[in-house]
Length: 140
Length: 140
DNA sequence: TACTAATGCAACCACAAAAGTTACGAGTGC
DNA sequence: GCACTCGTAACTTTTGTGGTTGCATTAGTA
Ligand code: FES
Ligand code: FES
Image (tube, each protein chain N blue to C red):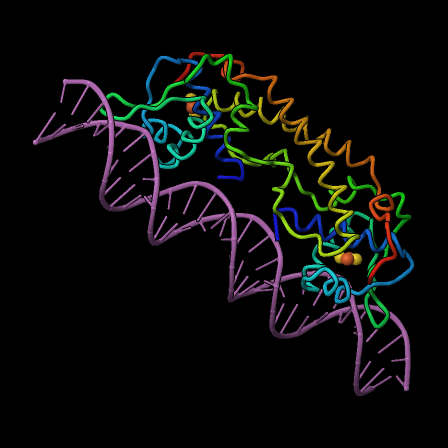
């Protein structure tokens, strides 16, 4: 897979859920469909649950379901739930060690933060329901 | 180090070069200052040379120098020279395998490409000379 | 109660990407 | 010729991430 495989997995799954939001899915089913492992699915979807996008239920008839309407879940919600930072770096990166480097880093991070914000802004304009517009009858 | 260490190394070095653009620096000096290895420095600066931002000379008095005025080297130049793609993914990623996933991926990549362009646009508005504004006398 | 099916979570293994390292060839000035 | 430098290839080490196994926990069902 690639760098943002978590994001891909999350969006793919949410896309299917948006198409049939009542259906309860198990991590095994999802993993099978996405070509990965149930534990990986639970790891990723667990993040989405922490962010309040999904609910999960244990036990016999358990599984995963949308926590709210698909129209109310944006790509930004998903992106932030997985706390990926494509552009901006984490604040705890490295000590400046020097004035010049400190200044340099400030300028760079300022630009990166700006871009990160515009990314999130842009992502918040598309929701899960839009992403799941099936052109033809689904095949499975 | 972290994910964009190449970019950090490049900008840090260019920042110093912008402050004293006549001075010829060896990869050993640069590596020593940046806390890394001469070969790593040559690898990174080699990319910048390919992009026409730097020149290198072999031999006794050899080393590295800016290929043009610091004001004419933007952050976008550096970013593109290192051919990093912070946001957008490479085109050869993975086969769609399905219509739904294909559609999904299309939407995502469209957003990402848009963000990548705005990132480059933004980076092109700052040049190396701006990044290197020393507030106090340098310490080394 | 016993059984089954699901999540939750911790601890590992496997693999890949990147930095770091070593080595050596090839220019260049003394 | 010698010292110094880049250029590059090959290798090792580190790190991040997905994959895997195992088990406790929870919930439905007979
Ligand atoms: S790190 Fe301090 S001057 Fe470069
Ligand atoms: S990959 Fe999910 S429907 Fe084809």
